[in-house]
Amino acid sequence: MSFHVQRQAYAGLLWNKQYYNYEVETWLNGDTGQPAPPEARKQGRNHNWPYLFNRDVISMPDTWEYPWYASWDLAFHCVPLSRIDPDFAKKQLVLFMREWYMHPNGQLPAYEWNLGDVNPLCTPGCTEGLHLEKKMKGKGDVLFLKRIFINCS
Image (cartoon, rainbow, N blue to C red; front, side, top):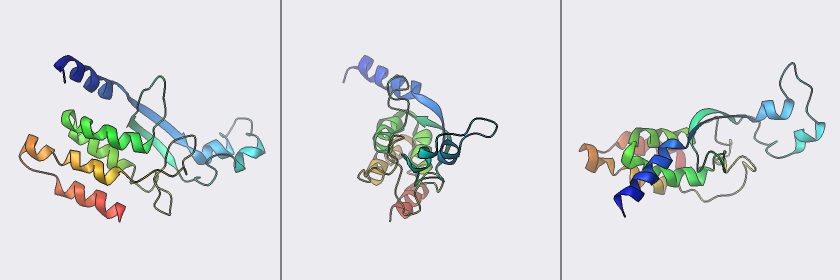
């Protein structure tokens, strides 16, 4: 791959970090001091994920055209991101395994438009790319791998 193309691709990964605030309970019930949302919203999309509480900086596919996360895409983005910012890439994968992202049944949120959509669990496979930091730093992060795989079992 051309150095310039690679550099632009990495710049895009770094540039498309975005603060993301999506609290399903607030979306369903409305903000205090504001008019109540339509009653139908309580049975609309994502109503069965009321505990999802996102207030984090997340690597987005494209903050202009796709200003929402997709957990599958994010996991794959973490593989090349690990070459330039392995700590951020690991934090992203761990973040989606946290209890305020996961459904009580262990499902990861798919994407904002349908959190409960079914996606294959690709996070464990993407951790392999992050273990490449052994080549970069001389040692791998075994604690990180244990943390990810315990959540996946």
